[in-house]
Image (tube, rainbow, N blue to C red; front, side, top):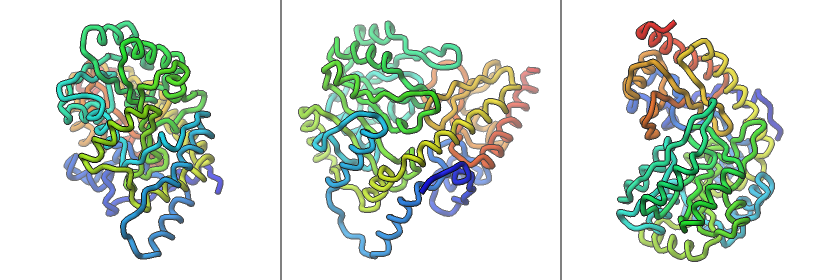
Length: 401
């Protein structure tokens, strides 16, 4: 089927469906009657073909053990060929329940306890937490905010490698929470530095479909192949794009057969093999087979939501919305407000909205919060209204005009 904005305008009541985004509000924020603009989970239905396939499979009525999804690798390969102009081989694609399972396995496979792992700061929290859970030491490379978006300080990045014993670099491409789409030129510089010091790279590309108009996504493996550097593992999933996180469908890709063997050893120990549930395989295949028009329309809708957010917050002189190049997650800075991240979250809750603050992303400088705009415009308007109420109260408290 074809899609238009009306498909994403539908307001669908998700309460009572064990939806973490909605049903978790009372537990996480102490109030169930909030507009949830926190976790990276949209309020959109996936393509109709996905829903139909899951329903038809459920009608069968028997839910025994599934089988390894070798046939479904073609769906992954075909999608990336069409969308990103890159070809992956079947023996390089491996399924896992989610990206964080893949990340944890890769970290354990390629490093030892106590090893240093390099990440950009700020960062998607679990990218830092998973290595910490695996007893690795985190080294942070601070991103620079320049003219409304973030840049890489390449000299500082290389100096951190020189000054430390870095064993792995974890890249978020596109970047969460800042919404940056790293250019091919930037990725070449990053890979060249890592190659110089023999640093393996894990690239989380789960948001690679969610690219705003005028931006171009470059898969990291396009760059590493051109530079003949095979020390890379790519992580991805259809779950953010098509709102299917609850179905647990993900995969990682690497051309490095030595990495494959090392990761397989960890998977065998942790019993996190390539077997997904039957619904996950079907949903992944149908989303990738029928999802192109859906994604193109979705990205236009998300960018329109972003423009609405920027316009509504523009009157506040102390608010700076970072330029959104990818994802459905707006990264917003507040200046001249004397609050901690925890206090800001509490103030937002009092105004009727649930957000995540900068400390959820290990932000070390300034006061930031992240807003999920992956929702119907009606929901967005209600959430932005609550945010504006909070910002107005903060402005009065600080004497800001």
